[in-house]
Length: 96
Image 1 (cartoon, rainbow, N blue to C red):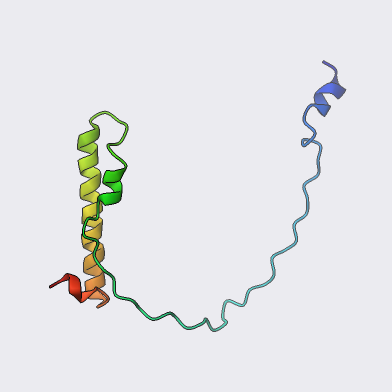
Image 2: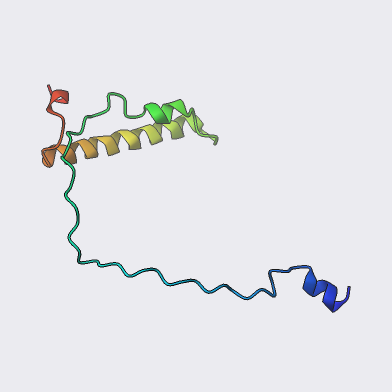
């Protein structure tokens, strides 16, 4: 194979990089818009439903791993509910 044939095999190799236009400047100290009204956060009745709908993970000891994943999701949901309660944004209808 000659040098010319080798050079022409990859046309992007000899191409010059295109110059990009700089991004327009952003005023980081500008006043932001108003925040939307806060809506209460409701606790899901079955937090692991999406995880269970996927079935067992494709691995050895899949059912055990699935149980561990479900426990992690349930723990994360419990922590999220506690944070929402501490911030007074938890839907109080769920606590009754």
